[in-house]
Amino acid sequence: MTATKIVGGVCGSLLVFLLVKWGADVIYGGGEGGGEMEAAYVIEVEGADQTETAAVEATGPTFAELLASADVVKGEKTFGKCKACHKVDDGKNATGPYLYGVVGRAQASAVGFKYSDALASLGGTWTPEELDAFITSPKTYAPGTKMSFKGLSKPTDRANLIAYLETLGG
Image (cartoon, rainbow, N blue to C red; front, side, top):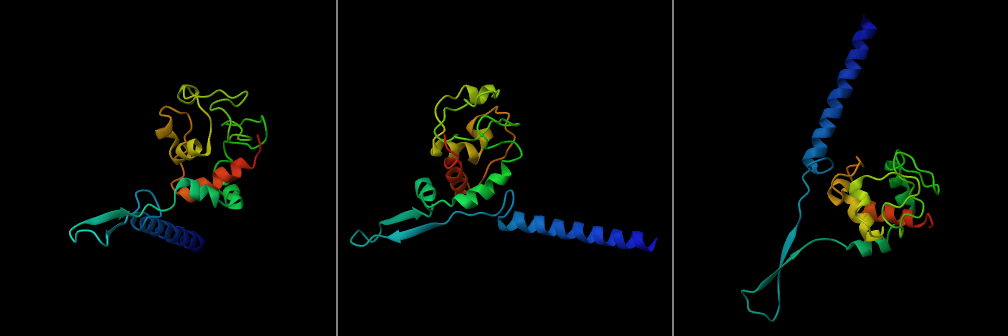
């Protein structure tokens, strides 16, 4: 009976710890619906009328800049989130299509994979920019897609992942 009480106490403590961590992630921006805020700055323009000011929103680097400085090793690590459904071996589909040579490949064209109508009807090519839009939110990019992945919210993670995918050949 004592062992049961000890195990129950440990499990209860872990549950409380996880709930507190989840709450902190939500409040401070680490989890879903987190407190991410966009900053805007007002900059006075010299030589102009004193009443004129320019509002500049801090948006950060562009996708092209992020891709140019992307880290392939970090991208490979980020690919760990994709491994459950995708393989990188040429022609080897899993739950999702193989990703070997995906950058520059026609959309919905992996041999032997049956795509959802939502993706099959898109056409076009998987450019880094298109992959970025898709990986951000697959359900928004192609409403009706069978892909259940929520997406990657961090632009640097997406750029690193796409840089890694570019190294897979094609």
